[in-house]
Length: 477
Image 1 (cartoon, rainbow, N blue to C red):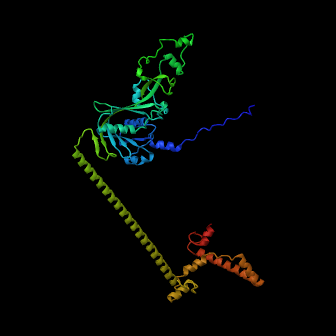
Image 2 (image 1 turned 30 degrees about the horizontal axis):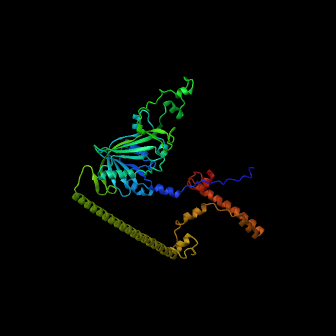
Image 3 (image 1 turned 120 degrees about the vertical axis):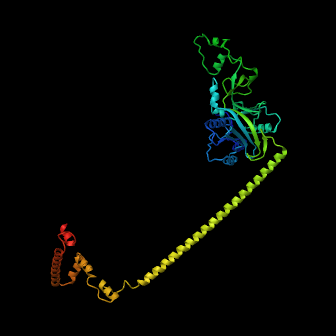
C-alpha cells in the first residue's frame, strides 16, 4: 500500500544568495577607466574601445568623454564606483602617450606608444579569424608577466601595478570554464620595450583522427562512398594535419571539464592560443609619485643626483604651499565679495521700501488736499452754468457764451415719458383736465416740430443738403 509507506522529508535547497558577501567581494575587485584626453584621432578612439574589451568585465565599456571633462572629474568619481586604475591616452606633437594611474594615491606611469595594432587589423592577417563573443568576455583575462624579475625599481613597480589591475587567481578553487583569455605582457631585455598581446584560450581533444573529431564536434561527415561507418573511422590516413605539428608540451590532461566538445575531465587535450588583439608596443618614460604631481621616481632619459633630487623635492614643496596659500586667499576673497553683495542687496531693499512708503504718504496727503479743495462743491446750489458764472465772476454772462449749449439742447429729441409715469399722471388728474392736457401736449409737439423743420430749412443746407442738422439726416435715411 503506497499510502502506508512513510514519506521522505524533502530537503530544501539553498536558493538565497549571500548579498553581503557578494558586495564585499565586488568591492575588492579591481576596476578601471580607459579614457582619452584631447584630440587623438579615430584610430586612437578605436584603440581605446579595443582596450576596454581587454579589461572587461571590470571596466566602464560605455563611458563617454566630453570636451568639458577634466581628469579631476574622473578621479573624483572613481572612489564612489570603486575604480582603482585609470588608463589615459593622449597625443602630443611627438608621439602617442599612455598613462597608467593608481587611484587614489598613485603612482603614475607614463608610457610612449611606439606601435599599436587594432583588433580588426589582427583579424585581417589571420586565415581563420575569430571574433570573441560576449560570453567569452564575461570573465577577466589571466595575466602573464615575462622578464619583470630583473633588478630595478621600475620593474618592481610595473609588475606590482599590472598585477593589481586584474583580480588574483586562487589555483585551488579556480574553474577552468572561467579561464577563457590570456593577457601577455613581455619586456624585451635588449631595448627595454614592453609588448602586450591578447589571446583566446582554445582546447581540442587529441589522440583521435580527424574523422572522429568531426563526429565528436557534431559535424556530420559525407558517408556516400562508404559501405559502413567503420570504414570511415578505421581510415588510418585521415590524420589531422595540425596533429603532427603539435608540441607534446601543449597536450595536458584536463582536471576539469573545459569549453568545447570532447574536452572532458581526465581526457587529453591540446591547448592553443588564438590572438584576438589589440597589440601594443610601449616604452616606459617616467614614474611619478601621486597622480602626476609628485616627485619623479624613475626617468628613462634623465638621471639626477641625490642633491638635485632633494632640491627638486624642496621646490615642489614650496610650490604646493604657495598653491595652498593662494587657494585660501581666493576663498577669503570670494567670501568677502559674497558678504559685500549681500550687504548692498539689503541696503537697496531698504531704500526701495523707504521710497515706496514715502510715495504712498505723498499720495495720501495730495488726496486729502484735493478733498479739502472740493469739499462742498457737489452740494452747492448752482442750478446752471450761467448761475455758476454769476456767482464766481460777479457779472452777467454774455449771451453768446451759453447760446451753443441752448441750441444743442433744443436740437436734441426729447425723451418720451415712460408709460408708467403717464399712467400715474392720468390716474391722479381729473378726466377733463387730462384730455385737455393731452391735446395741449399734442399741439405743442406739432408747433415744436414745425419750428424745428423751419430751422432746418432756413439753415445752410441742414435738412436737404445733408450737411448738418439732425432732421436732415433723418430725412435722408
